[in-house]
Length: 171
Image (cartoon, rainbow, N blue to C red; front, side, top):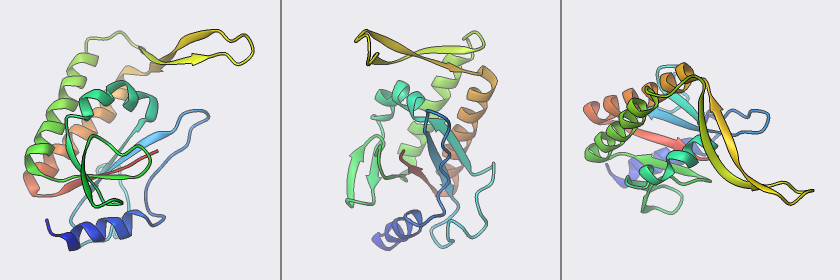
């Protein structure tokens, strides 16, 4: 992909057309399958087929495995590893999209063996008043989490096969 294409991703992704949803206390990462660099992101809008959202606490849980991906940061015009937490990340090379698909499928396989709800150990937090620390408990509906991960895995496979890319909007 040429620099012009990447410039288009940057221009459109910085507009107000990105999908980002806020919950009471958790933010969600959003992924968008960019259908082609020649179409504007907002051309046909975002549909359930071309986006997936995952809470940032969940992404933090699987973050180490996402650092195995060679990605591109359009804000700095530099290659990087993993996801840009506070900006846009583009996953575009065919072999990286395949690796991304395989990583997400591995997490799906692992979580398919979990009880419902899925309870994960999150970040270590301190209680401000008592100054006691403990690990945050992340609780997810098993079906909903696996469905969202399946959407993301399918997007990665589609992008790999059809020469597309995936755009990640940070928190």
